[in-house]
Amino acid sequence: MTNLHPKLAEITNRIIERSRPTREAYLERIRAQKQQGRVERDQLGCSNLAHGYAAMPKTIKIEMQKENVPNLGMITAYNDMVSAHQPFKDFPDWVKDEVAKHGATAQVAGGTPAMCDGITQGYEGMELSLFSRDVIAMSTAVGLSHQMFDGALFFGVCDKIVPGLVIGALSCGHIPAIFTPAGPMVSGIGNKEKARTRQLFAEGKVGRDALLESEMGSYHSPGTCTFYGTANSNQMMMEFMGLHLPAAAFFNPYTPMREALTRYAAAHLAQSVKNGTAKPIGEMLSEKSFINALIGLMATGGSTNHTMHLVAMARAAGVILNWDDFDEISAIVPLLIRVYPNGQADVNHFAAAGGLPFVIRELRNAGLLHDDVDTVVGHGMQAYTQEPFLLDGKLVWQDAVAESRDENILRTIDNPFSPDGGLRLMKGNIGRSVIKVSAMRPNSFEIEAPAIVFDDQRDVLAAFERGELDGKDFVCVVRYQGARANGMPELHKLTPPLAILQDRGQKVALVTDGRMSGASGKVPAAIHVSPEALMGGNIGRIRTGDMIRFNAHTGELNVLVNEREFKARSVPAPDLSRNAHGIGRELFAGFRSHASSAETGAMSFGGDFA
Image 1 (cartoon, one colour):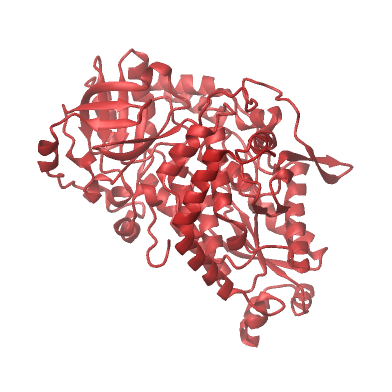
Image 2: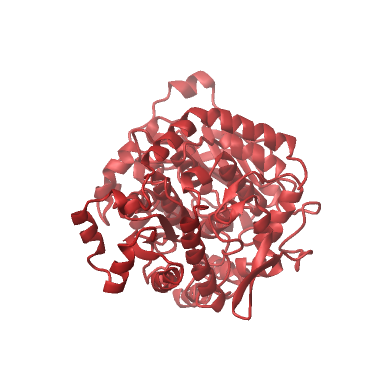
C-alpha cells in the first residue's frame, strides 16, 4: 500500500486528539473489567455457575467444568418475520456443533428485537425504529451481563440491529467478538421496474394489486433486501471495521458458502480465544477502525442513516466523530460503486462484479484506507482484499479479481463514478444537516424557492392529493420529526409524490429534522437538521412563504429572511399528542426526552456515554 493520503492523515490526527480523553477513559474501564482467571466464568460462585449450566446437556456440562474450555455467547436477532433475520434460525446449532470440535462450548446468551423499517414505513411503528437501536444495545448488554462468556458471536443484519449490536458489544468491550451475517436475498425484479410501478401507483395509474405483485417480486425470499440501503451499508462497514470474516457480507442465505462461513467464524473465534490471540472488541476497534468505516461509506455511496449510527457506535468506544469529518472525508474519497438507489444494479450484481474486496484493495493501494488496524483475522486490511471459495468443501481465500467484471457497477480508483463520496454537509441559518447527492440529477442541486411548512408527513401527502403542490417550485419543510419530537421516523413515503412533481419539471427539495430511508436519494433532501425543532432549532422558525436557498454544490442552506426578524420569531409549540400513544409509543417517552442531537448520534443514553 502507498503512503496515507495527507488529508486523511490530517483528519485522522484531529479525530484521535479530539477523542483522547474519552477513548482513554473507555479503555481504562474495559481493561478493569477483564478477568485474570483462566476463563470468564471463574469469577462466579458455584450456585451462580449451576444456574448457568442447568439447561445444558450432560456432555456439555462436563466440558464447561473443565479448565481452559472457553464458552462463547451468541446474541441473535432472529425472527421469522423479517426476511434478513429468518436465516439466523440455524446459526446457533451450527456454532455449537462447530466449536465442540475445537474444545469450546457455546450458548445463546440472549435475543434482541429486529424490526423492519420496510414494514413500518409511513406508519406509527416507524416512530419506534430509531430507538430500537438503543433497545438492541441494552438487550445485548443484558445477554452478556451473566459473565459466562469468553467471546461472543453476533447475528444481525438490518438497519438499527447492527449498530445496536456493536454498541452493546462495546459495553462489554473486554471480550472478543465476531459478527456473522446472513446475506442478501437472491435478486428479484429489477429496481427500475419496481420504482416505475411505485410511481404509477402514486399517480393512480395502476391499482394496489399491481403494486403488491411488483413489491413481492422484489422482496421475495429470505435475506436482506438487495438495494444498497442502511442494512447492506451495515454489512459493508462490518467488513471495513474488520468485524466480519473477509468478504462474508454478500453470500446468499441457505447456501453451502453461508453455512461454511458461519462455521468458520465460530471455529476461528474459539481457537483465537484458546490460544490468546483474540483481541477484546473494545481494544480491537480503534479510531482508525471507525474512520475506515466512514471511508467505506463514502466509497460505496452508503446510507445517510450512518451519519447517526456510525457516530453512536464510535462514541460507544470513546471515539468522537462529527459531520465535518464526514464532509471532509467525502471530499477526498471517490465513489467506486453504483448500486440502487445510486444505480440500477443490486448488491448481488455488485458482489459478482468484484465486491468489497475489490473496493478495499483499490482504497488501500491509493493510501485512502488505514492499514494500521486490528481485525478478527489479524492485523491490517490485506486479508479483506480477498474473497472466499469452497474448494473440495474447504474454505480458501483468494485475491479479488484484477479487473471489474462490470464497470457500470464497480470501478477502479482512477476511473471513479464521482471524485467524491456523494455525502455532504449542509449548513446555514437553518442549522446543520446532511445530504446524499450521489443519486441526484445534475439539475436538482440548486433551488431558491418559497417554503411550504408542514408538521407531519401525512399533511404533505394530503396536500399532494389535493393538488396544492402542483405547478410551482417550493421547498418542503417538514419539522417536529426529530428524535425528541416523535422518535425521528424515516419519511420515505414523501419520495414518490415529490419525485412525481420533480419529473413534471417543478423544482422541489425537502428540508427536515427527520430521516429519509437509505433507499432514497432522487429528491434533493437536507435531512437530520440539527438542532431539531423541539430543541429550539431554527427549522422551527421557518414560515410558509419564506424564501430558502438550497445549494448542494456549496452546502448552503439558508432562509432568506432578515436576521433580526428571523431571530425574533418564536418556535411554535407543537401538538405532539397523536405521537404519544399507540403501538407502544408511550413506552418510549423516556427515550425521546433524553435523545441527543442527530449529529451526536440521536442517542437516548446518558451518564458516562461519550
